[in-house]
Amino acid sequence: MKYGILLLSLGLSACAGGWMKRESSVEVSEVARSYQCNSEGQETRISLLPDAAAVAVWQQQRGVDFGGERLPQGRFALVEMGERNSGGYGVAISRLAGRRGGTLILRGTFVAPAAGDMSTQAITSPCVLVSLPREGYETIEIVDQDGRLRGRVAAAP
Image 1: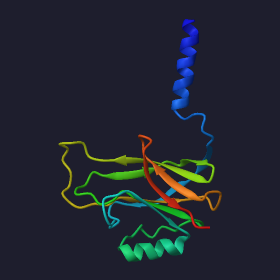
Image 2: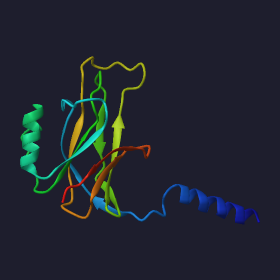
Image 3: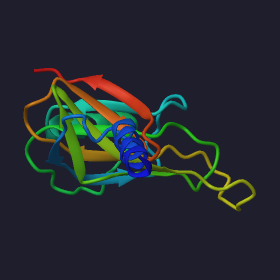
Image 4: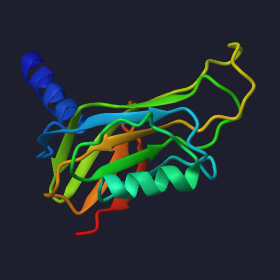
């Protein structure tokens, strides 16, 4: 009886952890980042950019320079953390993404300075440019290290 309760508890906790959700593994890659992306507002935002030309237009409009790196062909997601009142903030996107149905799930780590930490007193707005698979999804989501949905965007065909 004791072992039956233990197995039932493990089974229920595994279900709560989401292991039964069908999700296939997808690889993405960060191709550029900046700590000053001139974001509008404090919300995390994800934007889909269809190609390198669209990335160049975005950089010009925002006054951002990703360092002149040559971008691979394909689609890109731009993940913006939003405007912050000091330094010490950042965002990183894992290479291991997932696909569940028509949704591509990016996993991000969002960093903030701890209360009382010294940081620069300058407005920052971190962002990351991620190279995406060409097809196989209708929606892109960004989920943080705590499993919270931070943003969603429809992927145009």
